[in-house]
Image: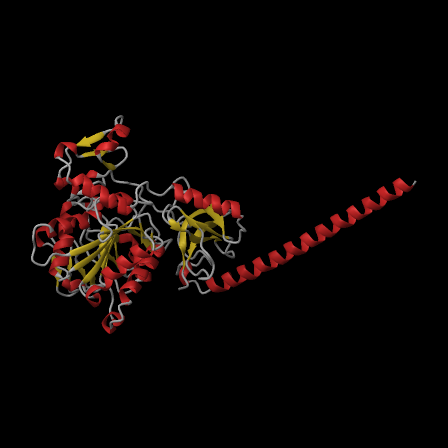
Length: 502
């Protein structure tokens, strides 16, 4: 699909915005370079009002070069030596033990006496007796119980890089709500994409001898979970490029899980890093939906894979751009290890994280004990402060506060916003009226974004023709330069021959 995403980062130069845009419309026949995190993503440099710049490949998972330094120009001719060096580096970044080896190690570990079960907190690794001497100077946790092994997210140290791993783990309140909701809706299988806490809770309840236990499969970029789950329960996976590190075997496991019972009774729950690119995530989720639809069953072809996408409410317009059928629920998701995303706070300090879903909102009952109530007009559950606006004909609040209707803007706005007559819109009282961070990145108009600009494709064509012209001029200049060099060499040779004859 042709997708040219909004810039992921931008700066100012001479009054114009500079940025980088993700390009998902690359030629399928063009080989994609790999870094340690799988296939790289294609980006393009852009400048407001100017033609699209040079394209390059960068890491899909890491937004910052210090986390993954991979970079390659799309039109660059890479030498064989550099390709081999990159491949060698990628191999060096792979885990010491394979998933299969970790499964075997777990079987040995779990039968050890309690006093013999050790976990290295520095290496984040379960230790077998012969390995302890190599970790003698490390912080080692002893007496690892079976209960601890069933809650690996509490044993492992969270990776809190918000742009790569962002392991902000569900609080028990939110995790239990999600599982209760999944059970109430009648789902039998859960594809957990970046939700290790939900996977744990499902496994815990299944081990308690329920009549119809729910099955789950965890897809996560954190390979440490392979120490606790089999290949049928965990796949090492990069959700930014739909890459299974385990190759075709892992891909087949995921596909089989999705297609079981002709694709019926399965739901996907995804909790991506909030600093990640929405367009890359949407592209991946559509790939997972395509895997589910390959059952060959006519029902799946006409239906949608049920999805819970957990993300901050201020990304609503971006998510709806790729999934128009999604609706945002008022339920506030909270996390154990995040200072801000906590339940029970009021005002602007409330958790901004919501659930986006393609399920009908009236089917999803939110807990009344937390103040949620059913709006008969909107036919969905809303937060206690989210009042129905007669002018908008909707419960309009997004952040948990009571919004007010602006007659001039003809829409509801946040309670802290005021109408600015200069900008002709509502904004914070401290806003800058000459703000340059709004509007189209291509033409500068304020009524649309870059992805909806009518000049986008024309700009791309101009860019391509401009590049071709530059390449022709470069070739012509090289020919002329080489011709001059050859002529000068010929003249030097003649002068040298005359000198010898004389």
